[in-house]
Image (cartoon, rainbow, N blue to C red; front, side):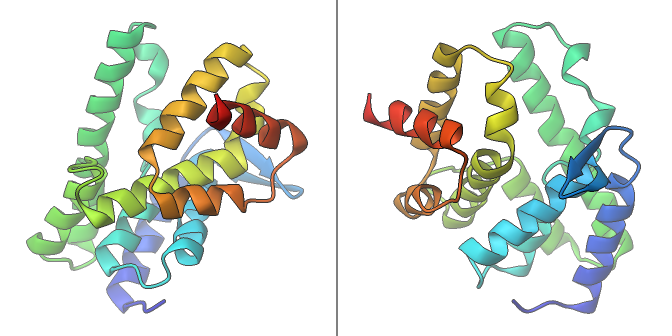
Length: 196
């Protein structure tokens, strides 16, 4: 996958920001700031799923959760309306954070605007790059986060979330999901969700 000097600089700046995450996650015996690990997983998954992705799509994948811990879910009402408000506010927050970093890395307004468009998930199912980003987000969730998520929630809620996840994905994304190497628990949950 082609890279430019300023993209590498932007990646480093994104990673420096995400390295400030006070929340940590262990993976393969090593501890990472949670959002830094998520960003690396997004890049790795995009590289495998869409190796010809544009530079602005690569940038978007890397900053998808930029500094997310600064707006915790718990700071909103713990209901559906609170969740939706949190998600909308996060999109604006990520756009603002990413835009400042990209400008500092030497990007022009056109590329910054393209990243903002994708971060806001505009035209899902209609815009090819928005759909690729959504597929990658779903694949990262299924591969790395579903099992831990499943331990905290009732099966009925999990199946509902998995059905919604499946509906967001393209045919190519679903095929990639079915090819993931998952735990028995995760595989069974997905199989149950998509056969109902």
